[in-house]
Amino acid sequence: MEQYKHSLEIELTSKCTLQCPACSRMTSTNRVWDSGDMDIDVVKRICDETDYKRYLFVGCYGDVIYHPRFVEICKYYQDAGKKLLVHTNGSLKPQKFWDQMAELDWSKTWFTFSIDGLKDTNHNYRVNTKWDTIMRGIETMTSLPEDRAPAKLTWKYLVFPFNEHQVNEARTMAMDLGFTEFEALKSLRSAATYYEQGNGDKFVWK
Amino acid sequence: MSGNNENFAPGLMPRCSKHSERRLPEVLSATGYLKPCCYYSTSEEFEQLVEYFKDRGIDAIGDLDVNKNAIPEIKKSATWKAIQEGIYNGNLPKMCFRKCSPDETLPSTIEAKNWEAYDGKG
Image 1 (cartoon, chains in turn orange, yellow):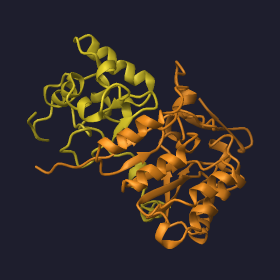
Image 2 (image 1 turned 45 degrees about the horizontal axis):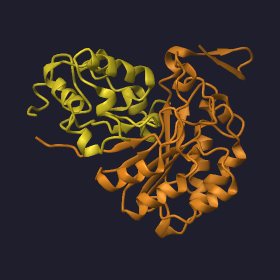
Image 3 (image 1 turned 30 degrees about the horizontal axis):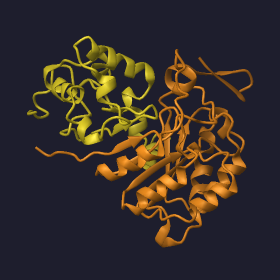
Image 4 (image 1 turned 120 degrees about the horizontal axis):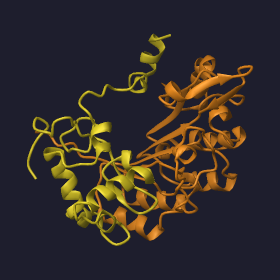
């Protein structure tokens, strides 16, 4: 019987600047999400004491780039030869942050920007995102030297009624920008909880 | 622990099993607990797991705390062993049966993950 070596998903922080309507932090009845940042010493110890196939820096309640020492954590894991996967909305970090990110070796990392639309629609679901700051991150990650570029750089696009017409344009844009992959996924979250209201520009979750 | 994917507990097709082709990652939450999968990521679901084992005399909070235990030690804890054995004896919280039922079909998002698949659906 084959045994599948598995990965470890690490929620480095419970912080997120966004307010995506169907996120657990918005729908949770007891709203317990502000548990802060994972202690850096614990994060490093986990790197030292384990040998998972891949370490997934993604979030349940949080987005990993908002951990105040995210760059340092990534460097520690990369220096240890670990394979990483990063998922982020990519928004609201300053140029200084991306400059530091540009110094690292992402060659063993699958890096994903979750962007559900274009400049005029991404914020419909991903409330509070700032398009220009996302582009800042994308420009950084697509401009790395080949030997330090992410093994996979993905634009992940959740398809909603408000952005369905832009999928082709986004895919073209992703390829032009230098992404290696474009994933369009119909949102599971839209099925039971989503409806359109008013003139089509406003969407409400219930 | 013994077993394979042919003798899982009735009503269960667990994706935390080392025999699962669709194996989910283990999860370490910002709260500092190692969890068997992302379905216990949120605090509400995790509380259900903690209460379930508390009723059976097992201290999941103490066992799964990475601030107190190394991950290799957590894997030897009573809670982790109970979860692994529960795959076969069925002694697991209801959440496990809801999220990892053999009747569950892959969501459309998985099917649409490849662009070509999505494209074909127009």
